[in-house]
Amino acid sequence: MNSVVIMGVAGCGKSSLGLAVAQQLGLPMIEGDDHHSAESRGKMQRGIALADADRAGWLAALGLELQQHPNGLVLTCSALKRSYREQLRQASPGLQFVYLDISREDAMGRVAGRGTSHFFSVSLVDSQFNTLEDPSGEPGVLRIDALQPLAALQAAACRWLMTKAPH
Image (cartoon, rainbow, N blue to C red; front, side, top):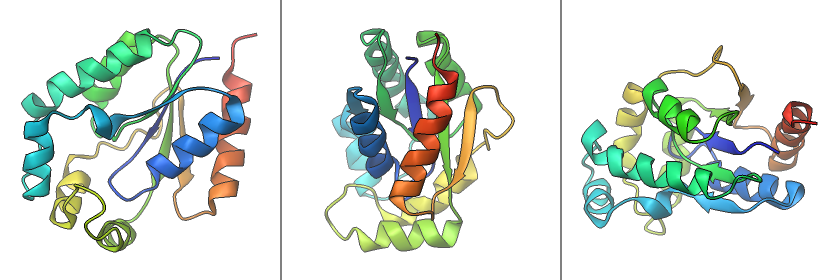
């Protein structure tokens, strides 16, 4: 099975769907947020958006994780820009992406609802949407509505991934 990135802006449900997909497919899951540097986490806590330079080491670390799991992996990663997705694709040929599409308002509500349990500041949701380059139409991308129930998202993602699995 190829690896898959569960992607989208903050608050779209990457972690919840990633865990559900990993459990159903019997694959390991890597939480992309766990690989941010302390400096990047600090910036985000203070409401400072990350620049490409801040993300470079993070994307390289995620690429290594993909390479270390040749039998498949579920990775959660915002992957907001096409260049970020291309970097991950280079690390893992055949990489698939499940894009959780959500409105700015719904993402804001979800991130605000986290309270202090997450390092990501609600003030950064706008910057995520400003950075996002919609991956719809790129090869190996499934776009799904992030507001569907988790079970429906899991079923759609797993069904699609199973049709993409090399035989």
